[in-house]
Image (cartoon, helix red, strand yellow):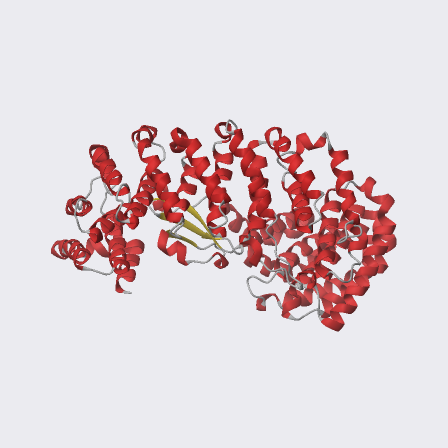
Length: 632
């Protein structure tokens, strides 16, 4: 714990702590660190001390590149040449953690660095030394991403590096493979002299079902990343692409039977690291990266065969593959769209599905109902009004009947998944149909108000938020004259929700729906909305004023922070990352848009809020960066 805390102190407050120490204490810290590394026998503890040494070294290289800890470099060279495996490991760990340790002396030591890495990568007796030297090589290349001459100088390390990728995977360690993914993403040029070997290795690992799913997915990630970062070069390796496509499709077939899946009321995120999801995402990205001209001819026959397979998993994967390549291959698919659509329509008679609207009434499969409603949303959002109108009556009747059923289920069983989607489907249809939705207004508005009034439990927050969105979209669609009969009731319901706003948790889904709904109400009511500004503006300004948390973290700290914490990271090299907490940023953006909307709609009626809004907005036009990022 002492080691972890000291490293964090040096990482976050070096300038406040270290320079204030007397010079003899500074010297003692340096020599004691080296001594402890030499004395420590436990590998995991020794690595923690090495992390401190790397952090200290990072801070002791000044802006001019001068290294203020020459003894540290001497220790590094002595250790890597030592017969003591623990010391070799320590030297490589420090170098991996801070590959910029040589400062402005790096060019002078380039051959020595190369010899050090080659020697360790050829250590046949100690696999851990080979793995560490491969990771250190990758870190060094990444830290010098703009130095093309260095890539050429270090190109002959690539075969050994690729061998280490292979060996470490079969020792259940994917750290070197992750380094290869980083290189493919940031410095694909380094791989060019041995690109065929890199691709062959990645393909082999991806196809090897004896490896775990994460390793196979990472191997596929190397090829997919290169299709994005080095598309022109990769297009020449058609043999690899042709072999990779069946691998992605095979992953998409890797689905499990789950008896409860069809009627689950919550959409779990657990399957997002599954082979099926990884394969589909990879196919989407590769099609976008390499283009439909290359990908469609290679995949078309595979998909057609899958769609005729008696096993539903293959038919499912085939349909999902068609969807995944849609964006990247859209130009080529337009020419055969009739053929594709007719083929897909056959599957509306598949044993699982009857047809899009009937599917929503498939009471035995809640999940299928929800997907059908979601598909309808996607369709109506982009469907021109003129195309939708002939089907509007039938569409609305279906939506109404399923809504009545689902409202009863909510009351009787508490299930809400399909109702959430149907509410958004109704909103989407109203949004597209506009004034043509007027005849159906009374069918839906009373039940929408009822939901907002009564769905107050925590688990119904999303349903309530979507219903608020639906009411405001219906109001906007049918216009002020029709909506005025309910406007007063709706405003009171929204005001009641608004009053509870301060008690809402930051991640409450109702917040963003409320903010957008108020703006729509402002558009509907015009000047009459001005009376509500005192209630609306407080929470809106609070949301628009959210300050995102930012942090400069090293790799270890970053790995300790889970994705659930809502952080996203940008790699800065030298094992450091810039993190920003993205939770709340979308709401902040929406709130800023809504403030502009109010000003536009209410004009002089908004004048008393102008000064505080301008004070909030003008600073947002600037970008603020941490000093360390500018230095990078």
